Image (cartoon, rainbow over all chains, first blue to last red):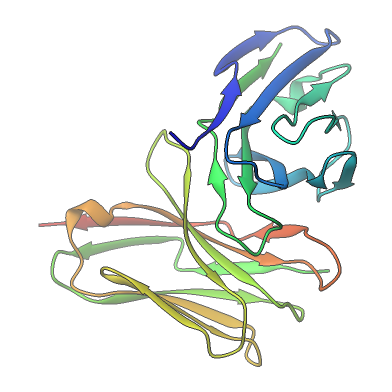
Length: 113
Length: 112
């Protein structure tokens, strides 16, 4: 089944403790992207990747890192999480770039205390 | 700076009625997207509109794009309860990047 898989689905952590949210797709898509969703602010793009080793900043990249060492995986790294990074995170992928239909992961609800 | 505004923010409509959701954006863009999100769920991609005058239809939903007016519409025909969800539009920030800016969403409730 074609899918985008995020892990974990839920995470509660403490300020400053490094964490990684994984995202994996099995559709051989070149384009992958991370978003965060916050009440009243809607969805905002964090980072995106056009292909292996090619990443670029979205609208709200501060406090996040990404890597794209393999086509299928696009992990989101929070080196020193802060409470303002408490949010619902979505990963998405599409075939070549953002002009194709996007497939979204199930979401990761992160709470930083 | 690109801003994306959706109207209305909330929409309560009766089954069988027609309605339109509007998505306005502030600077030139070459692509516009519509998504659906059910409560507590992930997003589902509905439409990708890539040119002026583009029109796409899926079931009771039809999306169109007018790049000159910087306006996209999502028209709902003969609404049914299953269409209750939040609908987001998103706009490509510029021609040479893949950055996307989202609207705030329209929460649609369809009642009998």
